Each structure stands twice: as structure tokens, then as C-alpha cells.
Image 1: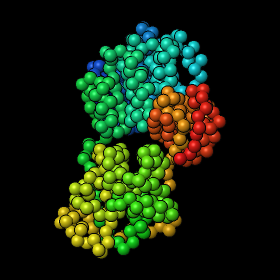
Image 2 (image 1 turned 135 degrees about the vertical axis):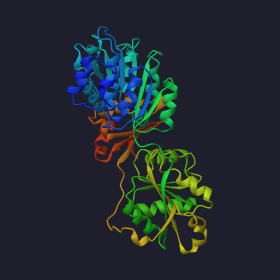
Image 3 (image 1 turned 45 degrees about the horizontal axis):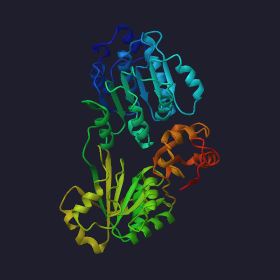
Image 4 (image 1 turned 30 degrees about the vertical axis):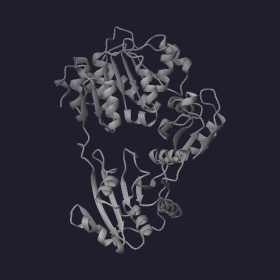
Length: 452
């Protein structure tokens, strides 16, 4: 776990020691040997794990200071993260003189960035939209690139940067080292890794992945809606899918929850495609915490992190039960599956009683909070423009963080469709964001904007 075990220069080791890095973190110990050898790495690592120092030490180790060309590019989802990364890299780069690190992000003067690029740089840290703008203008040249790094790759995908990323890749040499760091380790990340990396080492320093770690709880009740609210008050789930057996029940339950201060939307077969999109986007981007669904309507629904599934109506088969609850407790996270049943449904739950993993509990143990409510973390803005208008996630992000002055951290998931774009905004900034976008422009063009 000691940095001195790595093939680093004496000056680099002295700098690392002076920064207070006495021992390698888990991510550093597992990933650095491969990175220093020039190998590709895909790593699951959260904030505070030492990931920036991991790729920072690696790219500085490979750097040829005498060659004043861009040799490393670090892509970040937000301006704030890019700023943090650039600061950390400058701290580690103190071991030698004349290393130039340049930050290129949206919300900053393009002209000033052009002037800085005239004198070249060794390392570029930036956001996909602004990097691509410089590449298309010819002000940034990456033919000498050795190392390409994606920091918080999952957040970049959530913010809709996949097109920008693919476009940036067209400008980088095929022979390069690619490092991909992500807080989650799902199929989407692994697919990206397959496309952009060669024989990547997979490093996972968070808890080992456990397939669907779910606690199964059954509650007998004569008032399902009342019990459901008590379950929410007791478990405090961040997001929930509730299953009903009919379309009518899904509509009525969602309406009842809203009346009880639980923000909920329903998805069922009677919805038009655009209505279905509106509902799914809001649930996926945390603009509503509760989704009420029928089995048919929920097909193909894939939410990365789901804290709870509720069987409001008993599923017709055990196979359906497994399919429903399998949406929670993924990738090592802990999930809760709740099933409600009445006295008339006791025979239907008997097959579950035979298996000790299913807990049958008394609803009396649940908390009752008269003022309990569930409100969303974000609100969704809809922009009447999308892929057909050549709008990219970086354009929307630039409009919000530049002219509108919002922080990147207050902007959530961005989804861009052919004719419309959806952007999640933190509750407290929604009015400000709406006014700025309504009165402002995206790519020098005005678009209709409304709050979903």
C-alpha cells in the first residue's frame, strides 16, 4: 500500500508525500500499477476514494514536459468537477516545472480560452460540449494525445453527453490509453467500456456486487393506501415503483397518493407515447419519487437505483413477483420489496410463507406520521427543441450555467429526443432556470420552454 512500491520518480514520490498521501487508497493500489504500465482501466470509485490522484499520478508519470502538445484530456460532466480536478492535478504536478494544465468548460469566455490555447498545454480538463466546440473550431488539436480520461462517466451519460463523447472520440488517436471512472458499474458503463477501451482492467473498490440484495416484507392490511403511506414514513425510500394489476387501479392509486401529499405519477396502457415519455423521464430524473405501474406498462423500464418495489396488488404468479421486485437491490445496493394483502388474499400468499426469506410482519410496527409527505428532488423543464434542431446536452448546460448562472451541481439528468429536450433542475432553482431559458437563447435561437 506504499507509493514507494510503484515505479515513480523520486520527485513525484516527494510531492505525493508532501501532499499527505502516506498510503495508497484501495482504488490507487488496484488501478495504479496497470495505469503506470499504460493499460486501460474501468474503475468504480466514488468521491473521496482518491480517484483523481489515481489518474493524476498516472497521466503525469507518462507526460513528456519538453513536448508542448496536449498529451492528456480529462472529460468531466460539470464545470465544478473540472475545476476540482484541475486544482488537484496542479497540486500533484508541483514535482516538476513548466507543466501547463488548462481548463475548458462552458460558462466561461470562449475568447479567453482561444487565447490560452494559442500557447498550447500539456493537459486539458473540460466538459464535453466545450471541448467539442474547440475541436470543431480547430482551436484544440489532439493528435499527440496519450491518455484520455472520463471522470464520473455515469453522470456524463445521465446528463445526455453520449453524442458529444462519440464526437470527441473522432478527434483522438486510436492508439491511446483510456481510463474510465464511474460511481456506478451498470451495463451502460460496461458497453461504453467495450467500445472505447482495449482489454480494460476492471477495478471495483466499493462493495462486491451482489445480485439483487432484497429484503422481502409482507403486510396484512384492511386499508392498503393507509398502510402504504405508513410504509413510506417508516422506510423513507428515495424512489418507489408500485405495481397494480389494472390500468384503472394505477390511475386511481396515483391520484389518491397525490391527495395524501405523496408526489406520484401513473404509467399504463392508455397513455399516448409522448405521455409515457413525460412520465418515464420524470421518474428517471428524480422529478417524481413514486411511479405507479401495471406489469405491461413497466416492460423495458430500467431504473439504475431503485430503493423500493411495492406490490399493491398481489402478482398473479410467483414468476411475476420475481420479475417485479428484481428491479430493486441491484449492483450491490440494498433493496426492499413490500407486498400488501388483505384477509381475502391469505390463500394467495401461502406459497410465500413456506420460504423463510419472506417476512410476514404486523402493520402495527409501522410509523404513522400525520404530516408525512414525499416531494421530488428535481422539477423537469421541457424545451421545444431536440436532436432535429441539433441541440446537444452541452448547449443546454451552457445556457443554464452561462447566461442563467446556475451551478452545474443543481442540474440533473438531461434527455434529448428528436423534437423535445428534458432537463431536471433542483426544486429551489426551477423558477430562475425557467425565466432565464424562456427569455434567453440556446445556440442563438429561442425555444419554447415549460415546466412539466
